[in-house]
Amino acid sequence: MEPDHSWNGDQELELPILGWSNLYYAKYPETRKSVSGTSTFLFGVPIIHNIIVALSVTEGELITVTSNSQDMMFLKRLLELIGL
Image 1 (cartoon, rainbow, N blue to C red):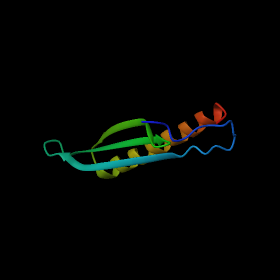
Image 2: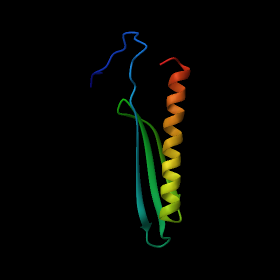
Image 3: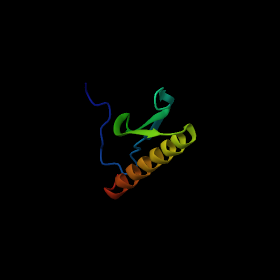
Image 4: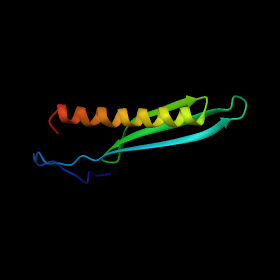
């Protein structure tokens, strides 16, 4: 696999940050817990991955959206801090 992007020192380089989440409603029949996961990608490469267990679908969706948003904001601020 070869890189398809290179940085020439341009300060206007765009670094796409993407977030993905999924929720499995009551995946475990014995406990009826919902399992969700989030992933954050930079240039299509997974950077952060979380697995979350919740007692309800509403709680799972809220935690998933919040966690994914926080991860993407953290990554954006980190890139700004190092000057990218």
